[in-house]
Length: 276
Ligand SMILES: [Fe+2]
Ligand SMILES: [Fe+2]
Image (cartoon, rainbow, N blue to C red; front, side, top):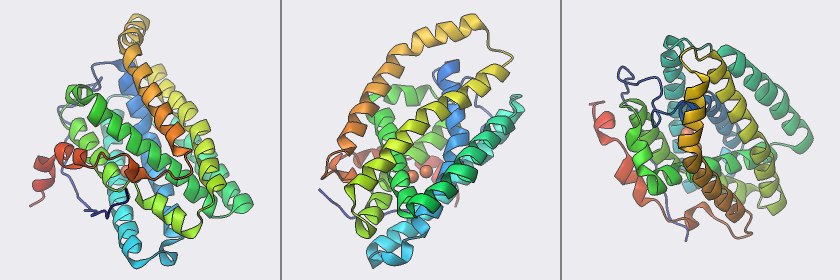
């Protein structure tokens, strides 16, 4: 059922002083996959903003307000994830090789090619697909594995809780823009196919770049962490696959998955309220 969305642009105050090296479940593989996302996400959010901005004048006034709030939220997500890079650099990681490779291949080559050959609606369809992925990952963590969220170190836990809660809050905005300006089913699923083909390999490459540089990571720890985390990784993959299949329904809408109650439950009000 489609509902009105009330979006709020929040600016949290975040500190990573107490964020340890393996901040996700004390697991090196989980943490380095999350570290890869810390690079992938902010550049992706800049892409989402560019993709929806092209259509902001073509949508109805209510949706236009939501698009502006969506842009406001994604802009702050982007800058807060970039701020986290300092923590990773302090831990001895060089982010540049993967960041540069990702930036050039996706935003220097692929994005202009999409615009040239398929037009601006296609990057919007890719945005809609990736927004589905972020909403799915957010719901998974909050609904299926809340104890994983609780294992995260202070600071980074607030970052993830705030960001993921806002992802659920704005999960239908890009979708509604695409539906209003296009409504072509094949383009929507084409965006999903491309997003799905790229997301996994880039996450893997990003995580690999952290693992290779990690001087504290031994092969035996890597193996143990893979063994300990295998069930969680399998369960996340299964859940994500089910939700991606659901996206292929002709009448799919992000609000079909009624999980908005998680926003209030997981939003870290204490770090938002500090703004004063
Ligand atoms: Fe975001
Ligand atoms: Fe988003």
